[in-house]
Length: 226
Image 1: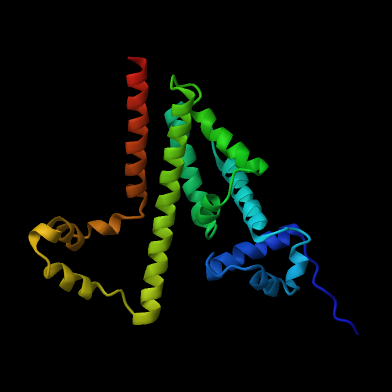
Image 2: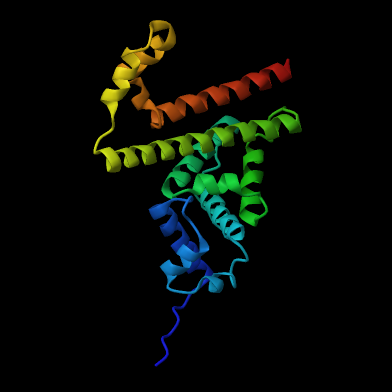
């Protein structure tokens, strides 16, 4: 009796893609691995997605759609930008490698365009020039992307260290810092040993960086009005 092929669909492929990204990361992601996970031959996927980049585009579009669905668009320009930044971070943290996908793709999908347009609408009421409005939302978006990506990579590094060495080699770091002069590493050493670097990746760190960006935009608006 001929073995029946598993029923697949675009939604099932996207769902399996997220699961595979969560398990192996984007570095090891391939259409062949995805097909194995689905129990099908790799060419079957190309009936739905003509290339891996095309699949990445659709995954990024899905992320954009979720962000738009979860964003509460009330308040003035500053409250909207703050709310949107926090929503973007929240969504990206829930979907593995979604930050990389957003950075590796172009806004050539409907919801990606809607997401970018919504960002621009946040600052449309300000007196900034159009170029300044675009630069403001790009700066904000880049901040959120790189903040999430840095935290993601840090956690992966910790995981690798734990797997290879059984513990994070903090003792080696202390020895290295103690071997360096005050001029070379004094400030870094003080912050490291006092635990300040543990703030990295936290809500507190994110909110502080976001505040700096919003204050910067506010200052540019004041300068423009004067």
